[in-house]
Length: 208
Ligand code: HEC
Image (cartoon, rainbow, N blue to C red; front, side, top):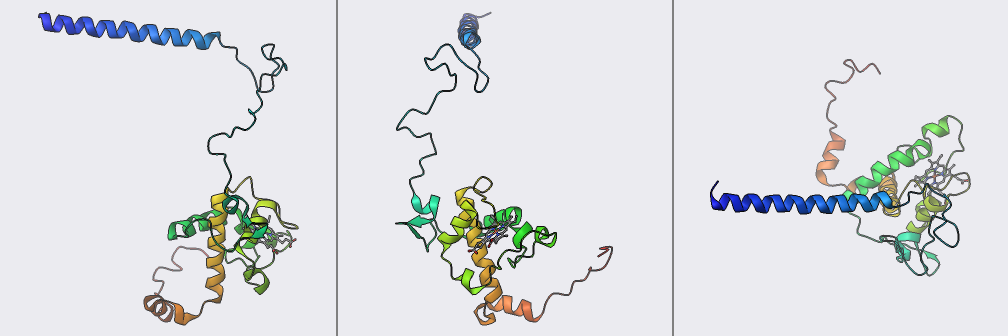
């Protein structure tokens, strides 16, 4: 072994020793810590509980819900009429995916209120296309998803606030789609409507 390789061998060995010492010290500490099941009593704290309450006036990371617009859909007690963030195509697509997962079973593909659960006997929701519902501010929709409405349960646990807004954007798109004036469509889309592509393979093996 040359002097150089010997010294680097010694250095590497020392490093290994230090690492070994560190990891074993670390493992030792963990082993000595008491392990509690949820809600298990503890003799260590005065109140006899192992679960510690939140420290007053502190907020866990990501839990500061100080944006009333985003988290309640209200400002000064009134339903908001704007979105708390820009509505992009990605937001509407996310809304579609979330709508299909959580709302479609009752409200149906186009929002008419004829989803599968309703066809099996659940109360029929109001159609999203009724004027009285079209006219409701965005904040009202946020409130319905968050707190439920009449026969409809709350979806606050299943749908996070940002996704509630995404769903509302998608419902607005559904509402527009059912009441749109053909003249407002881009030329290509109008041409597609006039000359729908012939479904070449339809009926072959589909079985429907
Ligand atoms: C289990 C069935 C069911 C699901 C799932 C459901 N709803 Fe509903 N929804 C209803 C029913 C029933 C009503 C009518 C309630 C009433 O008027 O008593 C309703 C009403 C509504 C209304 C109208 C409220 C008003 O002002 O009249 C909105 C908006 C709405 N739902 C949005 C949603 C959205 C968004 C989702 C998905 C996050 C959703 N719903 C999921 C059953 C459902």
